[in-house]
Length: 380
Image 1 (tube, rainbow, N blue to C red):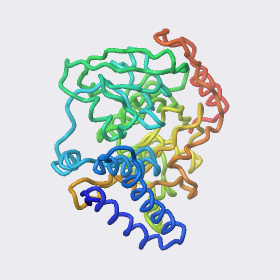
Image 2: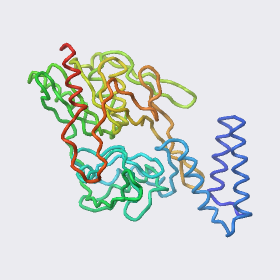
Image 3: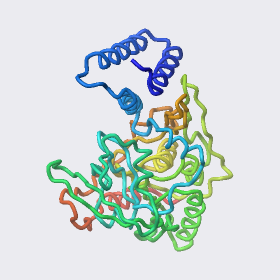
Image 4: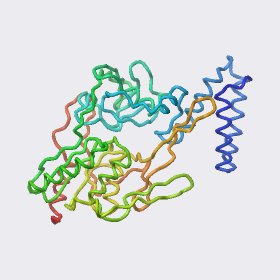
């Protein structure tokens, strides 16, 4: 058999993993894999395209780790190394992976939200390309493009036999991601629709304005909020937490690095509750975890998805690469957060919308419960 570049790459990666893990069962798996390659080569009915076979094996290796890890082709590696920003316009979706690409959240007032896409919807195809072999990394980039350009999504909700085809027009995401209003007498409401480098400053301004307008207590809503870096989420948490551990970074080998709060950053002392749901992930999850873990806020709503890791590129000899989660975040107490999520203090389910295209529900039981909960708390 001619040894292709992906085979060599897989052998090198396998050898590396075997040395690092130094576990007998790992060596056994690598031996089985070597046997499988030999059996495919000698028994498959046609002459196997071993490059294609090995690319599939590499994808499967990454897919068996977590939804954000991926195998990248040489072209995709070059995109990462170029440092070029993603295309300027999108449809407002954040994705994970569960057999197909799956919606974590649709940003407020985005093309996807207006079309009725919701957390839990499966994206079976983007334009004419099936997502079965598409990584989250690739899917998020395919969704982006030039403002005004269109794309077509084949969406499954509930019954896989009844997919819905939705055409969306890409838009540049609005810069205003934080807004505030009075939700009830003495209660301010801050909506964080997306987390970006300016989000902490906007949250501070919104809280100051609400305080001037008589809000002695705060509701912070991070439902369907899935964008932003961990540092940006923790920057918002610093506004509320004067002391203690905000989160813990954990790297290979269980090495842990606590991230501490600072009293000089904490400018918001009002009693607070945080609204969460299945679409709360990444930076928003770290924010919610930091407040809950320091007894600074109750969490009201649904269990979160558990997406709190950082990835980096590891290049392979043939120019392809592995986009691997090499660092994850833990709660302030050291409990797992990535792939585990957060439990709410008070569990309240979002209204279920099973019919595709149905108007969003007018009732908001999670917000109602938050107002009720705050009524029991004394003002700062």
